[in-house]
Image (cartoon, rainbow, N blue to C red; front, side, top):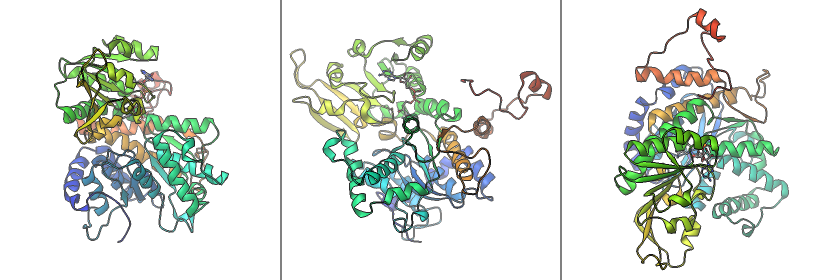
Length: 496
Ligand code: NAI
């Protein structure tokens, strides 16, 4: 079999395969979906363009999708998050060799430039022959952060206008490369993205930030195809965002810096699902944790959970570790970083790198950036009248997701829950957007969450592996509560 791909080093595939094998054991949700649907092949005919951190756990997801009949092309959704040996194993496949890869075309490596990143994003749509016949291209997207979805939407918008705005019109550096990618595409084929979009049946989106983007497209009437919001399955956001970060945040800080977290003061910006996991992890290591919040409900939750709630400007000189988890922007300014304690650690686990003002930091006159090791930088501040030269902060993963940049992201078990939702969402959307599907529950161009009964199914798939025994309702008890013995057990408005 011959196909195009671009990864760091295909010879590392064996190391990747060993890790995938161990991960499979920790991913009961995905493995039981393979057992349940392996024969019926519900994804036969699905051609999935995937953009999600190319880790070992994602490898198990990809091979689950292909086991259910899908064809897949994959890129990472972050320049630092690829585990190169996992990418190699996916390309080679369980039965291939580096000389004769039998797996899936992957376009991802750790430490991509932004230009390369947007090239990889365009490659997941570059199915052989798609320019001549868009119907042979991707018909599904599996996205994390909505970059792939955004690329298609921008492509269509600019093709309709017949031009891509000049780079000067767009200030953020990252957007510059999106435009450059689309400008090149417009020259090569002025109808490429229009054709691709027409063939797409829908997208399943992994994370809070991506979901926010989709709802924004829908509100503005710009959404081009149906979307399933995987993030807001309870078994995703209340598990991955919280318990996943509880594991992978301290992992990232420790691998990056090896500082003792115990006894330090940590400041966590945002007390949503990710913030709750981050705060619990840092407190678990013996750190005193301070929370900043803009939402009174989350702030009150933090206070009731025993955390001090403060404003960032009041604790800049108190904190030893600063972590942003908001999904917002401009949370830690360059000025704030200048005021921090010497060797304060700054990192972000929100989806995009605009939570920490790196451009502002780089623009401080006289500031020096020292690479301690990849994805760990000391920024040495100039003398400013109150402090001598040499005062510095340690910035992790250049402000990008540090749990994936400095460590390997969430562990398998929690990703099994997230990815079981992804797989079920792909099956659901692919089936109920088929041209000949006429059911009343056909997905229209809007954003949906999975039905609660499927959310409960994902949870069930993970209980056995933990030795948990679920109590069964009697018919009498179920009638009393007004629910079905088989679920769903809670109304839609229940908050868990
Ligand atoms: P969320 O909406 O539950 O929580 C964010 C919280 O930040 C909210 O409570 C909000 O009020 C607060 N906030 C907003 N602006 C703020 C500001 N200026 N100062 C202080 N607090 C502020 O969202 P969730 O699910 O916790 O996700 C947060 C981010 O993390 C998103 O970008 C999401 O995509 C990303 N994410 C990252 C993961 C990782 O592995 N690193 C895993 C899952 C999500």
